[in-house]
Structure formats: C-alpha cells, structure tokens
Amino acid sequence: MEPQALGIVLWGLAFFGLLGLVFGFALAAAAAKFQVPVNPLVERVRDRLPSANCGACGFAGCQVYAEAVVERAEVSPDLCIPGRQPVASAVAELTGKAAGSVVDRIVVLRCHGTSAYAKDEAEYAGIPTCAAASLVFGGPRACKNGCLGLSDCVLVCPFDALHLGPEGIPVVDAEACTGCGLCVAACPKDLFELYPRAHRIELSCVARDKQSVVRAACMVGCILCRKCVAKCPAEAITWDGRTIVIDHEKCLAYGPSCNEACVDICPSTILHRVGQRPRPEVAEPVAAEV
Image (cartoon, one colour):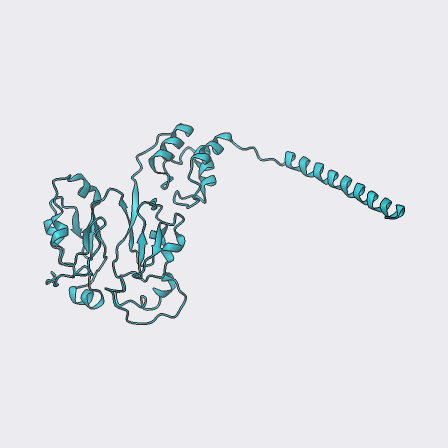
C-alpha cells in the first residue's frame, strides 16, 4: 500500500475510534443521569415468579405484578395462580404480607361433542376462530352450546396445556394446566370451568335444551333428566333452572363414603369420574323432566 493511502487509513481509524469513545462516554453519562432506581426487593420477588407473563394475576406480566405487590399495600401476595401456594408463601415472606390459601385448580372442558357424537348442520368458511364462527348463527355445529373446535383456547394457553385432539375438540393436559383461566375467557361458548385439582366428578356438557333437541344434535349430550341431582347425598349437584351445576367443595367435603352413584345413574354417561369421559356405547335415552 502506498504511504499516502496508508496514512489516510490510519487517520480514518483514529478519527472514528475517537468518535466512538466520545459517543460511548456520552451514552454512559446519559445512562447514569437518567437511571431509574430499582428496588432490590422487586427483583427478589420477580425471581420467585414463574415468568409465564400470563396475566392471570390481573397485571400485565410478572414484572408489573412484582412491582405492585412490593410497592402497594393492598396488592395480595397470592395472586400468582400458576405459582400456586409455594409462590404465594414465598412472596408473602419477602413482602411481609399475610398469604391466603391458594386452591390448586385445573380447567375442564364441559363438552364432549366430538366429531363421532356431535352433528354439523353447515359448513363454515369464514375466519377460522371460535369467536368468529359463533357469530354466524352460533356456529356450524347442530348443538349451539357445544365446542366449535377452532382452537381459540389452544392459542391463548401459555403453558401448552391444551391441544386439539383427533376427535375435533380440545384436550386438557392436567399435569401441564396451572389453572390460569385464560382459556375460560377465550371460549365464546363458556365451556371451560375451573375445577379443584382434587375434584372427583366432571360434567362434560352444558346442555340447556330438552331431550329431543339435545339428542337431535349430539349422541352424548345431557338430557337434563336430573337423576344425578336426586341421587347425590351431599346435595352437591343442583339444577339452576337451565342446566346442571356441581358444587365441588360440597362434593369433596362429603368424604370417601360417597360411592358416586350420580355417575352410575347418568344415562348419557356425560357425568363421569375423572379420566373416564363418555364411552361409545350410549345408553338408551330416558324421558326428561319438563
């Protein structure tokens, strides 16, 4: 390289190196001047949270909740639902607040309208979301209370606890589910319900119609015969005027003496023990009360 060209290169390197140092010192000075003090307790609380940023606590992410629970006296330390009791106790200890009891819950899909049981009455060709499909005459399924199977719930689950099964409805992974409840809000049919993790029975249907209407739409829909209501010794199963409702606290409190006769008497097998969803052999329907 010619001496003149080498000199230009060296001067260029020196100039831009010096310019970089000047800007570096300027940025460092600005960072020091405008630095926002960080409460070390906030960081300690933040480290205890599961980093899911699911918003189940009511705040926009774990960092915001950590700041709120440290800096605001009215914010409870037991709002992190995915963290359950261990996280609530840890946050309470760090903040000096009293931790309440956190119920370990999971979500249950109250529908078993799989493609084998539920009927379609139309072909939907719109936006492929449950929210959009439900706006078009309640969706393409004959049962207007049933699952549409377009995976809105799957998409909002931050814990990969939901996936669309081969039968056309979501399947809940009980081990992965934290009970955050995001799928509850996402379902336009209101089919998800939070159950205590230790629950004994499930009702996989929210049918609100008479037997003839239910059977025309789904082979395993609840026909509202209310036999389970009469058979429950704990009075944990009731009829609210439209559908069947289960009080799981009453059910669990009754104790092991219950033989779960409510399940055995269900003619649709839609009321079942945990892990025993409706089987293909559907019993003959019985007359429903009117």
